Image 1 (spheres, helix red, strand yellow):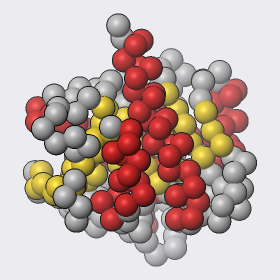
Image 2 (cartoon, helix red, strand yellow):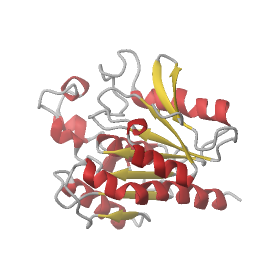
Image 3 (cartoon, rainbow, N blue to C red):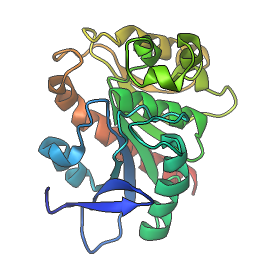
Image 4 (tube, rainbow, N blue to C red):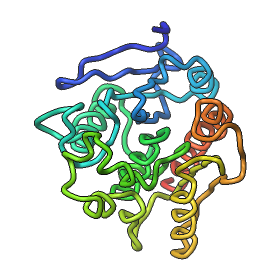
Length: 245
């Protein structure tokens, strides 16, 4: 593990913490939600490079298969949901340990973690006013019935669909900074199109890139979009801070 990353035990689960400037209190932070492949940013030097360049602290919980919903997922915990853990443990830890309050904390995720980040931001826009996602699996319910633990978490594909990010968008409140991107060759592309269509129809400001192609749903594409997605988090947090002045 890089000397810039540290692992903590936080209420029964491991989290990785990146501190861009040790010795100085971090100003901006993001929570990283990994995908089903469980790849962590501490193992990805290119992402770490951009975190350091942008001065972004990062906390990355280890979330099992990475569904990040308010349902018990056996790969994460048999007693509490990943959503509950993020809201009741990770966010308060950032405030108590690092003096980082909502408004200075963004959400970022890749693949299934990208869907999780968008879903959480749509559900809790005051807690997470800035969200960025690379290749989010918007139609994650398509995986229901294929033998994953998703089959244990929801009684039907329809129940799973009703819990998807697109259906969490609130018409009276939403994250003020939204970014997502998806390769046109990605299996999950149509869901991202639907998300764009719904946000546009509701008049919700957002940024998205559904044109850049660099290998489909792959780390080649994730690397291609890394700087843009992470820079959006940093700049989005700065814009949000100015709104609160």
